[in-house]
Image 1 (cartoon, rainbow, N blue to C red):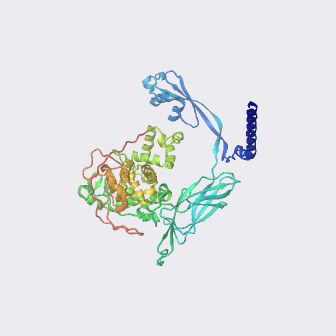
Image 2 (cartoon, rainbow, N blue to C red):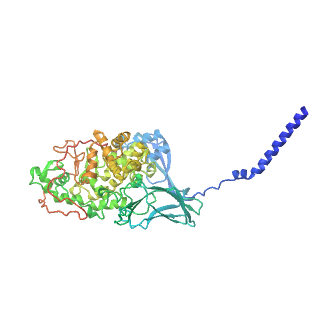
Length: 625
C-alpha cells in the first residue's frame, strides 16, 4: 500500500509539473508583454551653461572683528535680508536686523564699541553652472471662422465654425494631429489645423477638451473650452414667422482663445455674459471721447476751490460748506473746471481698458464714486488715488493678481524673495509691498500745480484696473469655496460683477457671510438676494454697488467713506491742498453731450448734494521700509 501511495503521489506531482510547463508555454507571450518596458515619453529638456559673477561677503562683529558668517551671492550690492537668514541662521539674522549705523562720535572713533555687526566684501570671481531648463510644449489656439463678429457682440450672420490651430515651438518638429472630445464625441484632425462645425447649444454652453500630438513623441497640455452658440431673432420660429435676419451669438471661454476680446472676467468665472454682450456699465466705448461726462461734483468742486483753481469769493463762505466740500454756489461757480477735470483721465482710462480688458465705463464709474476724480490721499485713513486704495486693498491686488505681483514686487524686494509669492513673504515684507503700492497710486504733490501730479494719477489708473481683476479672482474662489460649485453654475455674469464691486468696497468678509446666508436659505446667488443679507456694518456696499451698476452707472457721486457733510472731523488731514490763489470768476458755458448715447443735460444743480452722512473707518496702516 505504501508503494502504491508513493506511485500515486509521484504521478500527481509529474502531472502538476507538466500542467505548469504547458501553462508557461501557452502564456509566454503574455509574460513577455508584461516584462517589456513601456516606451517613455520624451522629455523636453536641455542643459544651458550660465555665467555669473559670485560675490563673497563676511558678516563680522564690531566688537572683536570675528567673522560670524560667510555668504556668496550672485548680485551686486549688499546681501539682502533673506540671504542673511539663509546663510547665517535665525539668531544671527535677528542681531543683524537690530544693528544700527555706528556713530563714531559716540564711540570716540573706537570701532570695537560699535554695536552689532557689519558686512565686509571679501572678493568676487567669475563662475558658471549647468542649468537644466524645460523646453516649451506644443500649444493649441481657438478661434471662430465664418463670423463677422462685432466688437463685444460675437454676433454671426451664419453658423460659425470652430478653428483649432496648433503650434510646435521646437525646430525640425511638426504637429501630427489635433484631437479632442466635443459634445461627448471624440474627434481627430491630421496636421496643425482642425475645423469643427458648430450647432446650437444650451445657454450654459458645451464643454470641449482638446490637445495636439507632436512628432517629438509627446503632446500638448489638455486644454478645455466652453462653447455657446445661441440663435437670435425669429428665423428659427417653428410657427413660420421667420421675418428677422438670421443671427447667431457665438461665445468661447478658454485660456487658448485667440478671437475677439472676451467679456472681462468671464474666463475667470467661466460664465457667459448676456446674449448681445454685457450692459453699458460693463462695456468700453469705441473711443475715449465717448467717456465724456458733465456732472456737478461737490467734493471735486471743493478741492478745486481749496487749491486756487476756482475763485468762489463771491459765494457765501468762499464757496465752501466744509474744508473739502463746496456749497451750492461753489459747485455752480466751479462747474466748468469740474467738467474739464473729470474728463482729463478719459484717454488713459480708455487705453488701460484696451490693454487689460477691464471695462472703461466701469473704471470711470468707480473713480467717480470713490474719489470724484481727486487722486489725493487722506493721511488719517490711508486711502489714495482715483480709486481710493487702502493697505488692505493693496494686499488683495498683490495676493489675487499674480501677474501684477510679479511685475511690481521686484521694484521693492529682491527677486529671490518675490519668487516665494506674496502669501509666503514675511509680514514685514508684505507690509512693505502694500505700503509701496499705496504710495505709488498717491498723486498728491505739494510742489505740483493744484497739488496733484497728473502723470502719477494717470499711472494709477492701471493699478486700479489690475485691482478689479484681482477682485474677480477672489470672488470666484470665494463662491467656489462656499458652494462647491463653479461660479457659472450658481450665478450670472452681471451678478458676479456686482459681487466684485461689493468685495472691492466692503471686503471679502462682508460678502462671504452674505453669500453663505443666501446659499443656506436655498436662494439664487444673485445680487438681489445677497445684498439684503449683508451685515448692517456692511450695508453701505449696497448703495455703492447700486450707484455704479443700477441707478446712474456711478456717474452721480455719493459721499465716500471719508467725505463728511457739515463740519469735518478734526483729525482729518488732507495732502495736496494748497493755499487758494484768487483767479478770475469762471463763466459757465454749455458743455457738449455724449454723441453715441443719451447724456443728461448739464445743469447747475448739485447732483447727489448734500447726500447722506457717512461713517468713516480707518484702514490698516501699511508698513513702510
